[in-house]
Image 1 (cartoon, rainbow, N blue to C red):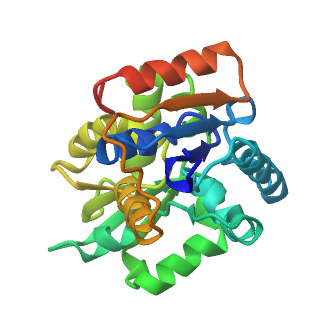
Image 2 (spheres, rainbow, N blue to C red):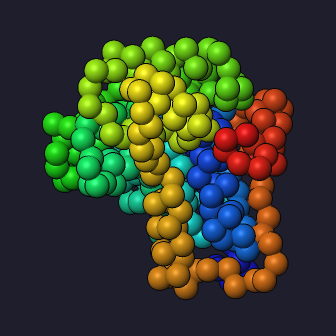
Image 3 (cartoon, one colour):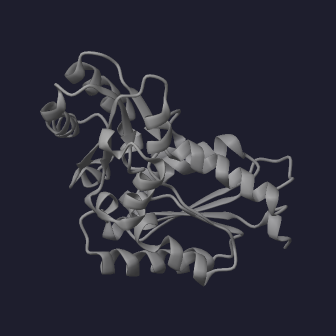
Amino acid sequence: MESKYLPIGFMDSGIGGLSVLREAVLEMPCENYIFYGDNGNAPYGEKSEDEIFALTLKCGEHLMNEGIKMLVIACNTMTTIAVHALRDRYNIPVISIEPAIKPALTAPESRKVIVMATPATISQNRYLSLKNRVGHSERLIDIPCSGLAGLIEKGNFTSDEIAEYVENKLVPFRNEDISGLVIGCTHYSFITPLIKKISARVFGHEIGIYDGLYGTVKQINRVLQERSLLNDSREHGTIRLMSSGDDRSLDLMKKILDSKSISD
């Protein structure tokens, strides 16, 4: 089979990366996709660096064994720990995601910006280097959200438990001059409408929400074109779901992909 007809492999610590996959399907409907969620070990954000590294490499091996033309790390925590190792290991394009702090900080009339992410993402050198490259880091307020990905992994994106969690994280900063909030974990993309609603109530006005998944999908498209790997079929591609978890994890994945939008 020609390389361009091989599937694109997506991986995440759980369901979060499906937010990136869904956007990719909208942008590139003719591509074939395989998604691997390590639901059996989710969430990653509070695990040690060594644990995350080993689990990420294992996820990569699962997808490489399926025969893919591109590997997408649809998880900020995986990216911060293991992206360089995966790029050194494989001879196919490896695309990663990072928090969208640049567009948040460079937006017109940008003031202070909140970054909600896992403790692992916020503490790693890759994120610190990103802040140094972008500059204006004094306007960033990093909020480590331990346990939030685990709540989202349950599948109820509008639960009172999640709403209370988000509000408790934002309230301490209600007197800050906040203009934007960065979604620093692909799990959190599923609760963006809830975050937007709560932040408007806490800060007394709507703030901009910035999510790196959109830039990641554009990069996937760009690299496929540059490498002549775009699937030129006129038919809709296939999506195959894989999980290290149980049948409930797969059922939740299917439900998410079948829903109309992330805000559902």
